[in-house]
Length: 184
Image 1: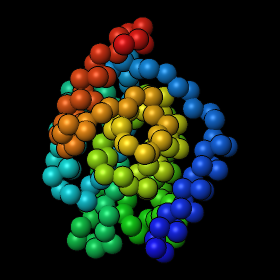
Image 2: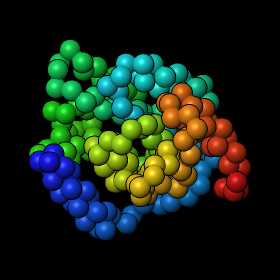
Image 3: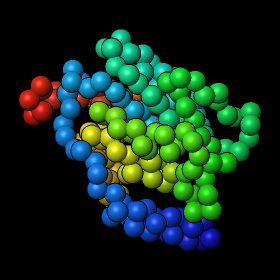
């Protein structure tokens, strides 16, 4: 119950902060037009990391500047991964009392205006939702969740097969469908 209260306060804070943030330059961006792509995901499960690494390689082959931010839901230093050029991480240690993510990696990711932001979160995570909500990215893509309102430009329904592999397949498919005139 106590964690539910903290999450309630955190969500309230996020709504208040979102009202003050209105400088996002929205727009549909085709994969060909995109120069920079941000990918956010839950890196607690190491198999997710491997799948995201494959997706980043796919975008790198398409000559895109890609940065990922993974959340590790652990304080155990043995669980933490080392930050590298395209692969950045934060953990429970980087959350304040209201579960708000803080720290250099988080702030830099939120402030970077990616052409496309891809949220590969399968299960709801307030810290990841916080970052995606406040991101200044032009075109936000993520999974459609029942009962959750997301400030995304494209929501993908994966209720038939709720896996990160299936979400990645769908994301690649749908962002390819956007043509150069920014239409479906």
